Each structure stands twice: as structure tokens, then as C-alpha cells.
Figure 1 (tube, rainbow over the protein chains, first blue to last red):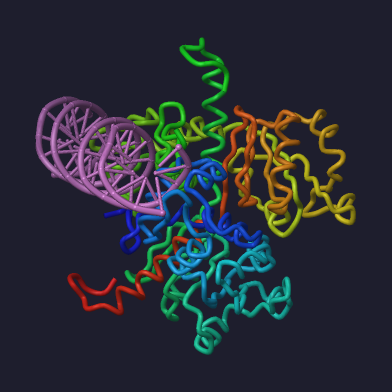
Figure 2: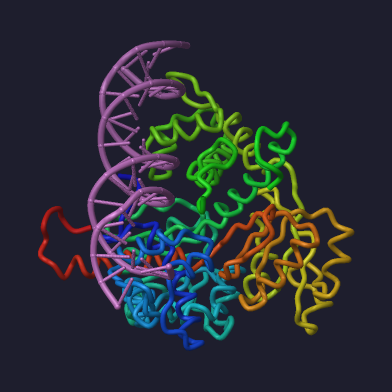
Length: 226
Length: 226
DNA sequence: GACTGTGAATCTATTCACAGCG
DNA sequence: CGCTGTGAATAGATTCACAGTC
């Protein structure tokens, strides 16, 4: 196993689509809409209706023939599945450009995430306040973590430091690491690592543009432009 | 089709793994290593060796029995596939927290990306310089784009503005949009949109932590902790 | 012996066909 | 009808088995 197809009983691909369903469902709730069909959701998100229905089936949401799915129940079920209905504390390590941006990101509240401490290795940064969050020196990582109740860490240090810092976090009891460094971490089993590699998205976009160029350079075997 | 399984002749999943292969291969080249086996790469990246070999097969890299794959050729083939061997210009729209971070990100050079202009809707931000990049007012978007040679745009505006700005970019000739807004864009066919939704990674991590909690609350049907 | 590389097998995800219900 | 939901069918990704090569 080098993959991880399911989370609990829910397919990974379904979980990956939940944030976009949830965003739309919350917006509908806000505007007072009470039910929505799989067709409408699919259209808004560029998916197939059957996929929406299958996904909802996996997370145990049941709809009403003729009318659709109740928006309120959708929101509740997805929030429960993602645990986004209660606030969880997380620490952030590495207050560079990206760490700073994440400290300023207001969307985390909607995802049940509260950054409760920030750490940086640079002594000139420690002691300052960045986007409203005081920055603590790295040497205080362990004692501060002991006082807090954070299970998650957001890792935004330089790739060279990633492994060492991640290990310290794991030893200090952090259970889940959201890894923005691009460095492939090796950690004791039991610590969950979620890689967030910005290069992947860029790779896909680059490859698509590149493939289109090559297709355009060839005679057109079938189908028009686009 | 609501999916897009392949880019040219290469499976999407393979393209998504290329950045991590490339990172390791470049590091090996830097340290003077000339060949590497699929086994070694798999170990470093937490994959299966056979998957590495299959991936390399897809992008046309051929190795040598007994020795492995030539590092230099690996780097070249992957850079070519991703078009990361030549520099492409891109514009960035939306100089908030995230846009600012991306303007300061030094890794783009290694990915062949050069941000050549930045735009923002806020009149207080236009005219300033952020992380070395002068910020242009939104009303100058079209004329400035006409003078530049950018095919790609990085979209980091607020979700509410995403659709409208994306449409302007598409009309101005932008071919690929890297969409950080979380808003599901609808654009004329022919414009490639790559969604980069930070909430997906958080959703997966949250769901994994959540699933573990629920598993821990149950009697252990098989297998130890983890 | 130590690797690569191919064709088959397995496993997963998506899509289709259609039954069921209001 | 218009919509959900299930079981089967298809497409895709991963993994296995093993032949081929240096």
C-alpha cells in the first residue's frame, strides 16, 4: 500500500470533492435555498450528476425524489464528515512568505481551523507580530506545544529544514502535519502527513498547455479546435 | 467527460508525480549522482518501485538493466514534458495575502515560471511595489496584457470577483488560468483552468484525523495502532 | 545478480441503465 | 414526468508475474 484509497469508508476522491460541494451548499443556505438537485450542483461545479449522487451516498446523505437534497442536511453531513463543525487548534511553523499568507488567510475559520501559535527559526522574526499573530522562537516549540491543545501543524519552513522540524513536531505529540514544503517527510507511523505541493498544480497546467501546443502543430485527426 | 484522464498520452496521475521525481533527480544531479534505480526513488518518495518504472515508461525514459536510470536524462525528459526547461511569462491578479506570497516565492524559477506583471483592484495597492513587483491597477489589465507575451495567469483575487476577472483574462487572450480562488470558473472552451484549492488538502487531513478518532473509539478488529 | 520493461491481473473510480418513488 | 439510488458495465490506475538484459 503506497496510496490510501479510502478514509474510513469514504473514497478519497469523494472527500476531495466535499469542499466544493460544501462551498456551494453553504452559499445556497445563505441565500435561503432549501433544496438542490444533483443536476444543479453538477452544473455549477462542472461534474456529472451521477457522481454527485454517488458521493452523497457515500457520506450517508439521502435525498428526496422529485425535489432533490435538503441543503441544510447537506451542509451538516459534510461538516461532520470533515470535522469542520467544531474548531480545532493548529500551530504554524515557518513564517516566511507563505506562512505569513496563511496567517492572514481568513477562510480557515470556515474550515474549523484556528491557528493558535506561530514559530520561526529566524531570531529577527521571533518576538514580532505577523498578521496579528505573535511569532515564537523555535527553541520554545516543545514547551509551548505542551501548554497548547493543538493536534495539527502547518509546516511552511524551508525544504532543507522540513524533515528535522517535522520530527520535532511528531515527538512533541502532533498527530497531523500539513506539509507545504515539498520535501517528502519520513515520520513514525501514526503521524498523518498531508502534502500540499503547489508544484503539482503548476505541473498539470504546464503539461496541458504544452500538450495543446504539440497537438496544434499536428494535422487535425478529428474534432475541431478546443 | 468531466474528468480528463490524460494529458497528451500521459496519465494525469503520472504528471502529478513528476514534480517530486524531478525534485529528487535535480538534487541528485547537483550532488553528482549519475544513475538511480526505481527502487531508490520509490524509497525516497514513499512509492512503489513498479510505479516509478511505469511512470518513466509513459514519459519515454528508458533505463539500463543492472544500473538504473541516468539522472541527467531523467531531468531533461521530465523538464521537457512539463515545459519547465524554458521560461514562460505569467501575470498575477490579486495582490492580497496569497498573491503577495506567490510574488515572493523563489521556487517558480525552477519551474520555468516568471511573473512579469501584477494587478490589483484596490487603488491603494496599485502603484506600490510588493516583493519587488510593481502593482498595476485593474483598469490597465487589457492594455498591459497586449504589450506582454504572457499565456498564463495566476488568479488570487477574492472569490466574488473571480468569475468576472477570469473572463476578462480569457478575452484578453490568456490561455491558462491557475485558479487559487476556490470559485468554480465557467469560461469559453479553449481556456485551460487549473484549480488550486487549498481546502482540499485540509479536507483530506481533517477527514483522516476524524476517521482515526472514530476508529480509536471502536474495538480493534484487526491490526495494531496506526 | 540486479536491474528494467511488458502483458496480465487486480483494484478503484466513473459512468450507464434502469428500478423506485413522489 | 423529475428526481434519487442501486447494481452492472466500463475505464483507469496500480500491482503482480516474469521475461529480457547487462
